Length: 288
Length: 334
Image (spheres, rainbow over the protein chains, first blue to last red):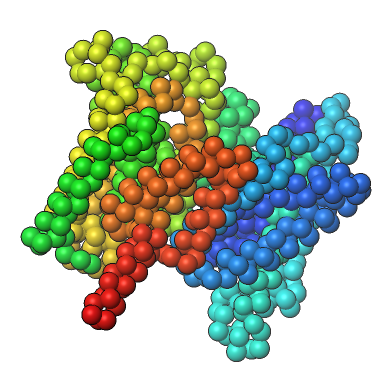
């Protein structure tokens, strides 16, 4: 019984990390149809922002939950102004430009921070779950993801701003005719997406060693989760991370973590082959 | 689209071909053949994507996958056979079959541009992850240990067919690579001018129209993708012979990105431009690698962003246009 609980928690944790690293990308892709291949480096940047803030003596929670999103949000604003803005509607060119950005960011970060792994102390001890102990920080990650997903859902579905943003994605002209500036909405969406990526980087920094080149391990998983999820931001991300997280965990238990990751990638390719528009093109259609 | 099969265009191409061949023959007088061999391998790799992307309009984010498969296959087969002849053939074949299989899966599933990019990217990552995880002694193919992150060292180098004791290296290897580049270039250019090639270009211009004309777009794209994979596999085989070690690095996303940058800078649509782009940028990267103050990823990435933003037609074509415009203006003055 207790063992089952621990396994379930493990599963929830796997799904939560997947959803967390995909959320920023999902926002930008779902709402703007822009695929940001530098997303992984955005996450790493969030991690480095946390590390730097910690070294300057900022409280760890503040560094993770405030400094990281703000730094990456500002960086996102810069990127949107300089690069993304000129490429709206040219999906393939956006892919290429953001790929270049990802290489440049990885190179830049290794020049600034060096190529060694930098750790962040884990601020939470273990938590008792029946007869077993699980990492308290894992519980925190699951909670952060749950809150983030709920907030994203509520903002998109229940607020006026969310309505306008969703409207702009369906028809920029109508929204413009109603007196909103689509350009500004796009900028805002990209900045918020970057902030979410920064948050992911900050929150994951104590768990994974951050190196300038670790963007690659995030982007692959985030990318396929978002693409498999399809157009609906929250429902798609949750559905895809649940499915892919479960598959990966299952194969991890059967064999090794590497096999789990390979199974994740293979199942995503198979999924895309049959549902090229993602899961939410069939189920949860029209949800946020 | 310029006609490529008029007598004049063919003659011009032959002039360019002979000039390039002469340059490649003379280059070892000026530069070290060790570097030149690598640059020529890069050119071959660029050629494979220039064909798939420039002529076929298929943007493959994972050309490194076929390159790496070629290199790994060469290493594994040459260790097991003790010679290189079969290994070279197998390397090209394995890469081609992988490309055909992946291509068939994608094109018969009618997957769009972006998703095609995703799947090719994921395919490369899969190979990278798998190759990196094969460190244990249980990962053996025949007598070859895959060796995980450290890769496979010490496999037999290239030898003269049928004479395992006569090893091809140094200037000899450069000659082999140079001939391979020229042969593949001529082959791909020839394919581009056949009716198959013209259908391929038609597909790039409008998939729907080609389909309505009765062509099987799926088959055409799959075959083109397979051909590109074979050339990339050959580049991988030659790289293995040059480096004398293969590591999972050959599958890395950085390699895939670089190939795309070469082709973009060299100019999409042609075959010669991307090869030149590969040689110049490969040399630039080698030079940057020697500098301590600048990371080559930063430069390559910034270059890619800049090219996409400002010169989507490529740097070389833009320079060529500039040059020809200047010439015309000069003519007016006279």
